[in-house]
Image: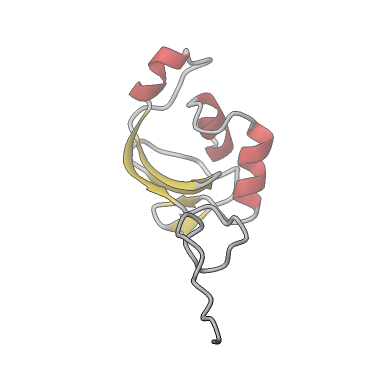
Length: 107
């Protein structure tokens, strides 16, 4: 099964167009190697790809036959790692929730 079709049918990515874009930019790795959308996926392959503010690493357990119900999506893969990435809110390297630094006063 094609890599982009698996990402769509397993409901990991909602649109196949987005899956294609990620693959074309080299952001989807299969067993640690960037692959194109047309790569032939096999059971036990490990996928790693960014999705919004996180990076998912999953192992393929089954390849879907036809359409997949949302309740059955978890039988297709197992999540190995789910790394959350900090959002860039434009505050630089500082923690956006820390109090502002105190300005020294000249007396």
